[in-house]
Image (cartoon, rainbow, N blue to C red):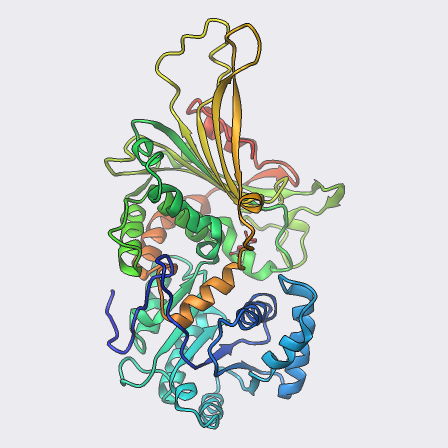
Length: 510
Ligand code: BG6
């Protein structure tokens, strides 16, 4: 479903050169007392304000259940900002100005009176634009999205096309729990808003290095000619985390690694790596190309051989002894939720036929690293008698998403000396060294895009559904198996290594 609301101007793509200014508007956060508001949203708005990217007139209104004044809420947010701001110390003068734009609206989101109160507050600002241009941020449970959409519509705040201003809805992943719930969620949201008014945040798309995949592939002549099954042996996408479940037991145990990050972050990385060149970088062209790749993903026929799931047991990390998943607070002692998942996928297109894409993610792995490794085939002939050519690796192009953001190219080079011996070396591009500009936080970038109305970096509903079509059969298969244990601080269960070994390959050691 991809209708266009006549009142919306999709704006200049953020991947092109010109950017539109932001209209005066109100930002309403439902579920404002949650972690997301203090950790991500307020720091993002503060930085946009500090860098003069917010409009001359704007209001941020938090809706939550606990009784508090505007002043108390501002103080709480200030404390959180001191902790979570990407730049420190917080600039007090900037904060004082910024805080004047923040308001609190008491209310339970299940109570219609909350929305009438919100309407009154917005109308009371005495500025038409602040009443009509509204960004609704759903920082609530997905099960409440439908209700909130219905109520803001009923209160006259959300329209499909009333010709007055714009209204946009931001939702956070997970977008559903499976294909069916994703479809239900979308039906609920698009009952009161056009698809083009819905912005689904996958914060990986806001990361500089993720956008750089497009620059690397399509701004250069060098890589594209070899970016296909004639030259590429395999692709490995890794998202490793050293943290555990970070106090999110209820959410995580009901979700697991595949639904939490594979279905969204890793599939988006795969789509950007494998897609064809879009005709332009506007929202529809880019998203159409990603959707084609996601629809062309095929799981291995033998899921027992082509997947491996794991769960961390206690172990050592960074010199500290850490608990196993089953000992984490709030996790049932017999939980079979996976904290690690590795899968082998194919992409059924002419470009990628026969090239395996190996994806893996896990908690409590040795270190935090996200990267895309494109491993090339070995040269068909190696005329080096003084080199054990078995020892020579594949040429590799590694896009380091985080940390140490950059790109590494691995290739064979002559060892200095009188012999013609060849050894693998690496050529590195590091963001931190090549540019003096600092990267904005993903949320800053994405929130600004919503304010401008540029949907380029937000997955469209058909992408979400295509991703669930891949994940659903895997979840059904895994439901009948127990995850393999791996010790915290290790690179996942041995079954994930065996999965590659069966193909004569091994995981890159990031
Ligand atoms: C979130 C997941 O989407 O991404 C978390 O829900 C995960 O489980 C997080 O820890 C990782 O994000 P980042 O930006 O730190 O790699």
